[in-house]
Image (cartoon, rainbow, N blue to C red; front, side, top):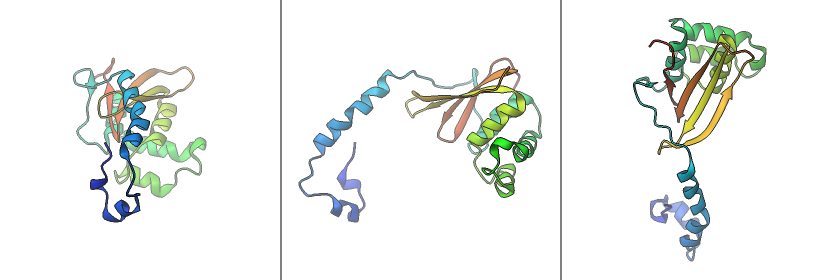
Length: 164
């Protein structure tokens, strides 16, 4: 719930002194109730691999699909040549990804799906393990489907048919 008392003093001064928060809460209550109807997904071992490191968790998940230690280098080299990413990535960005100085995300998932001929399904969950969105990076005739769960910048991968 929104509390005026937790606002920084200058922001509190902006609010009208006669502002009644009850109608505001009532107006947005439906957003809280909608979450109750969402499908639940709580990734846990052994069905899901949960990496230790948040920043590199997407790479850890995708790496297990290939078993190759040079996964990040191969992926960033491929991204540099991928026409679809032209203008979206540059040498500095790729270098930061390669050295763990930037968080990998959608561009890396897209490139991974193309490089490895995978469909990558990403289900984003909220703090209550409710699925709030699903997106699939798809290719024609995929070699396999990789299922990821995402919460913020942390990823987990469903262990389905390949060794960890």
